Image 1 (cartoon, rainbow, N blue to C red):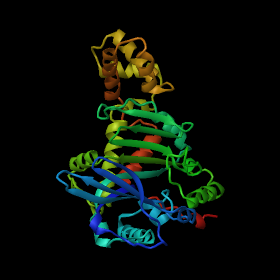
Image 2 (image 1 turned 135 degrees about the horizontal axis):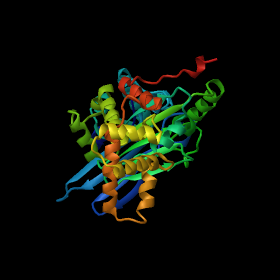
Image 3 (image 1 turned 135 degrees about the vertical axis):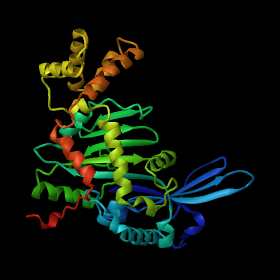
Image 4 (image 1 turned 30 degrees about the vertical axis):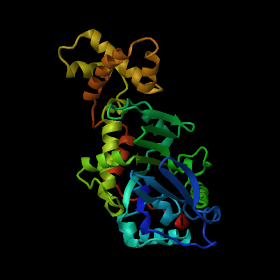
Length: 377
């Protein structure tokens, strides 16, 4: 349901224990009117399987010697209480999360009340969904198909990264992103190659157990990262939620589901539906175009069929655009984009590959994935 969260706490609501048993705040950087300190989970705790928590303290001069002091708490909600983010958290586990977080912060030498954690301002969070695949599909094969998409104009200044041997796809901007990756495969990678940079030792042991007991398990991870507060506020407002959310506000199935569904429907499926159709025969497409557009000219029909074939070929729309950019002006691409819109308009929404339907169903149900590997023989 939800993974990474960054909470912003006024400094006066946190008391630091001055004791050599606890890790110390370390100066990270300082500049004109700004100073930053960090305190993180110590390596010994991480090695024992405890989730990684990153604390960032700051002091900012807002003018006339008026200072703002605060602490940002960054952590994975799922790893905090489950030691992994393959199994997802439920809305009903909020109190467990709060109590566990309070205890972990105390172990780091920081005292804060449960109420202040519950009502802490949220600076960023990552709603997500782990999707168990069936019908013989693999996460990597689906990611390969998704890498063909045309990026919606709603994603300005977009960087698309199809990497890790084809097991991850990141469509990202400075303020938000949508990420797909092979969750099972990623659990076995080291931090330099993994999408999940803070994988715990327990998570890697879990991967070993899964490969022994459930070798054909395939899980596609769909994660929306609202990494800048302005974008998070914009998205929350879009769905009628609190623009300045506190932790309690975002820890809800309804909030996470609506955000994930919008990114899946609008950014991914919105202008790319024709790519996911079962129909691949050019002549079948020809009949369909003529049937839907009675007065269309033969030249335009042939153009649309050729465009469809090139868009569905390996590398998809993204690679087609890169190739054409070498021999045509940018404005000519927008003329081709009109053809893509027409292909998408006549796409049969009821005749899509079953992996699309599986993602649709998982997002519509938004049931938390819970795998108890210990009970699998």
